[in-house]
Image (cartoon, rainbow, N blue to C red; front, side, top):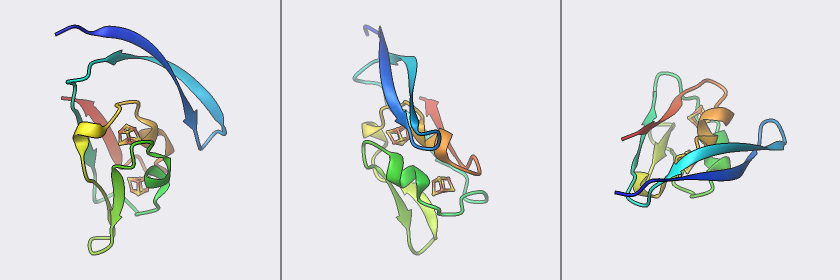
Length: 92
Ligand code: SF4
Ligand code: SF4
């Protein structure tokens, strides 16, 4: 498996500016998205931010959920905008 370093610039909604970070590019990489239901207040900040549109609010549980971890870009924008640190992204 070949891994290449890449540089990406992603918008940071909370601070209204762009952040630049290095990340490892690997098409086969699948991220693990963990949402702490005890902390999530279903504010929708991460849902609005997610560029892959894989996060949503489950109305019945009133909590955030992910519909497809395979599409996650792993840039952790959702982690940064969550006001209560309820969502975490891990390299699986
Ligand atoms: S890290 Fe994944 S779930 Fe979070 S905003 Fe990016 S694509 Fe969406
Ligand atoms: S930003 Fe945090 S609190 Fe708000 S819906 Fe997403 S995980 Fe839940």
